[in-house]
Image (cartoon, rainbow, N blue to C red; front, side, top):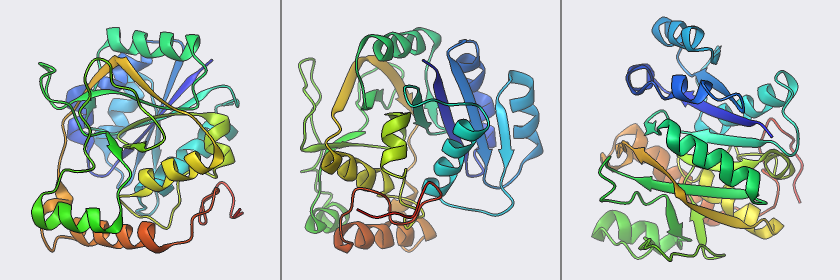
Length: 264
C-alpha cells in the first residue's frame, strides 16, 4: 500500500516551504508526494527537489479539480499507483507531524477505507475543530450562511462522533482509495474552486462508497476564507460553484474530467 499525496499550489509557495510538511511526508517509504505549481515558482521547485517531492509546473492556470485530477493521472501513469493505493488531496495550508502520519498509515493499513476525513483542527492546541465534516446543504443553506452566518450544516465532533450518509468531507485533507477516485472520474472540472469536494462526496454516496472518520489522525488547518471577501474573484467563484452544484443533474461520474468524460 502506497499513499500518493496531491498538493496544488496557487501561489502558496511560501506557506508550503515554511510549514515543511512535504519533507515530513517524504521521510516515510509508504508515501510519494506530487506538488503541482499552478503558477510556476522557482523557490517551490528548488524546495521540492531538495526534499524529494515530484514537482510539476502548469503551463496554464487551472482550478482545484483539474489540478488534482492531473496529479492523479501522473500518479497512475508515471508513478505506478495501483487500485488498492490511496490518493490523498492535501491543502498547502495543512500541517501534520510525523506521529500523526504514522497514525494515518496504520489506520489505512488496518481498515477497509474508501473515502475518509481526518480529525482537523484550526489550532495547534487542538481546541477548535475545523469544519471539514459537514451536513449536506440545500441551496437555501448557502444563502443563509452568507447573509445570516447560519451554521446549521456544521457538526459538533465529540469523542463518540460517528460519520454517516448525511455528511460530506472537505477537500482540504481528503483520503480516497485510488480505485474509488477512478470509478467516479475524479473531481468534476466544471468547478474551478469550491463545491467540487461536496459534489465528489455526493457522487461517492450515490455509488455506495462508505465514508470514514479517522478520529485518531490529527492535523492543523491554517484556514483562509477568501470567498468571504464580498465581490472578490473568490466570492464569484464560490457563487458560481453553488449554482452548478445545486442545479446540475446528479451523476455518478464527473461530467467534465481528464479521467474520462463518461456520465452515468
